[in-house]
Every structure is written in structure tokens, then in C-alpha cells.
Length: 173
Image (cartoon, rainbow, N blue to C red; front, side, top):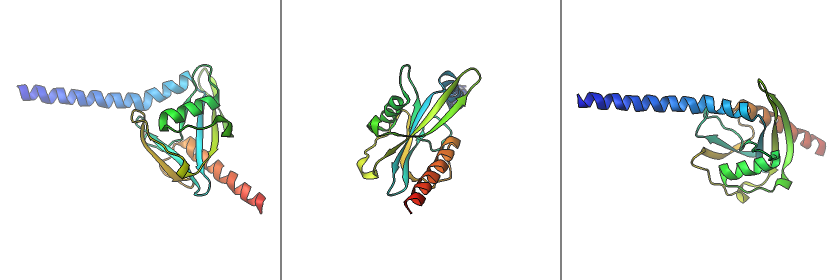
């Protein structure tokens, strides 16, 4: 009888954990966007190597994404992206060195907002990062030609980024 109770309690704990994961993977991101649709992201770029710093969050769909997140009350997009990258990767960046790349207007049921994407140029060697173990599963420098396991917005941004640098190269010629 005791063994049966133990098996049932383990099953219940596993089921509760599964429901918790479903809640955090599906419902929490949805609520965050619904409550605050204003977001800021940064592409840390090593131009020489054609690489961008990407991360995977613990809670999510295991796709690569950019450092960044939602704005807090009274915060600008630039301040938010500096705070978020500090929280997620322990990297300190100067807000004056951020270059605005792309603004995406977002409309939800009752609110509208903006997702602002910034460029930050650096070299891989000068950036010393450490992941926040409560939020981040993995941090890695990836080629900006990567096409697999990306969130949809990141895929669109990288296409835009490649076109941007191709246009700069054609202007130089």
C-alpha cells in the first residue's frame, strides 16, 4: 500500500511540474506581452567575425533570442535594454553607443506598443558575459547567417541585418 501511495505522489508531483512548465512556457509570456507590449532588444555584434550574441531562456520554446525584454514604468527603451542585458548576461553597455536598427509596432487586443531593436558593436574578446542561472539556459556567439532554432522576430531581424551590411558593402565599392 505504501509503495502505491509513493508512486501516486511521484506521479502527482511530475504532473504538477508538467502543468507548471506549460503555464510558464505558454501563459506567462502571453501575459507579459498583454500587460506591457513595449519591449527593447539589442544585437551585440562582432562585425569582424559576423557574429551576434544570442541566448536561450530557461522558460520558453528553446529558440535562440536576443537579449532584452519589457520596459519598467518610467523607463525608456534604451534604459530598458541596458538593464535587461545586465540582468541576463552581466554585460554593461553604454546607452550612447546603441544604434537604433528597427522599430516594430505591436498591437494587442486592447493595447499597442513598440519593440525597438538596437545595434551594439563590439568584439567577441572585449565582452565578458555570465548567464543569469535563474533566467538563461545558454549564451553563445552565433553567425548572423544562422537560420535554425530562431524565434520568428529574430529571424526577421537577422535578415534585415544581413541586408543592412550588404548595402553598406555595396556603398563602399
